[in-house]
Image (tube, rainbow, N blue to C red):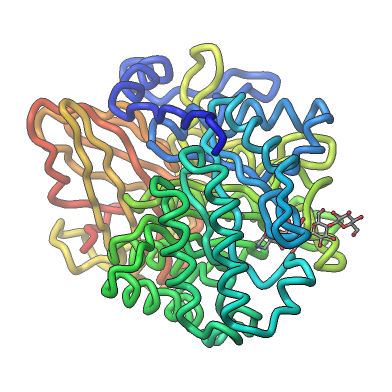
Length: 493
Ligand code: G3I
């Protein structure tokens, strides 16, 4: 076992008030400095306030490039090996283990005080030929157990979570054909989880897959399996949603899907997000991609058990996408010259990252402050009555609190027939609650009236879809959620 240490997670309550003090002046939301693009607070610092981690997939050879390394060191508080901990990288020959690249990933994580995430122990892909060639179930079981013991054992105590089994499903929700499935049957998943628990008793143990990002046959198969495993007492702590997405196609049930797994009693994480498009990238697609990244991060922040978001790489020059999807790419938040893209800003805004040097809280790029983008549509028919149930919106508001503060997570759903082209939410905060800082919207408070207007990237809300926003507030005793919420003047149910 190596003897690195796990990074100390920032205390949400302790940091949020101090950080908010640097970002807000008297609770007012101010416009950004004029001139050059402002320097943002690092993602990782803003993520700490939410008690989530922002991760990236590292291929350690890229660290020799200064532009790549600078971003890696500045923005992230979780590191996962893109390839270095996989079976073909660690045990190319049976019983002979090589951890050179994997150790480089672990060492880099430690050097930047970031969490180390393990990827992956049992997977049908990137398997050495000697594994796929096994035909005897007992022999395969021995090989699997030895591999888990050696790899998870080496990083025991250092890794916060392991993708124990990766990509076990077909898209229709049946089991994917693999040497493990063929020889060991459905039970190989439970066997691998149990073995991983023995090898590393402190790491969370996860199942990870793609195309499980919305509610569909594949994610429902995962959901049913996790429910069964938990009922059987098998150690499964978390589920990873890879989120290799196509621009403009974040599933409408994205947050709802994360929430249903959280409600099963497991933690969730966005484990491999990238959002691809046809290249060369158009400005419209880059803007849509920014909205999509914002939606992904906001969905995680809206789900209490979401541990964070990992981006599958840093820059478009080092991405698996163009090699697999011909004519597509531009999937990451930095371009191949390490220049930040609109997606970078959207993630920063979703996290509530401020401007460096005590500058005021950020506003969406290129949009006015405090006003919805465009005319609100979907106005209520008739005068708002203030009564729930007669409007074109639904609001859900959850609060998690500590001594003198709390975080509110708000979901606003367009229940009407017309898209919102911009939105403004108003509500009355219970007595003693004072807004400190918000994200994914422009937040302000006047007396007890709390207002949130859309950010540039989430003003458009088609019928049947939702936006997730959130805020930190101080309180003097009551942490109750507001009783009534309006959007664009109409009371929400
Ligand atoms: O290391 C060899 C090198 O020696 C050889 O010269 C070169 C020639 O092609 O190949 C190198 O291996 C490549 C490896 O990445 C390391 O760079 C493989 O060809 C290439 O197929 C492999 O691709 C990786 C892929 O997983 C394999 O399935 C990608 O980098 C990696 O981003 C991708 O990551 C996966 C996650 O693990 C699971 N979820 C999906 C995700 C994207 O496919």
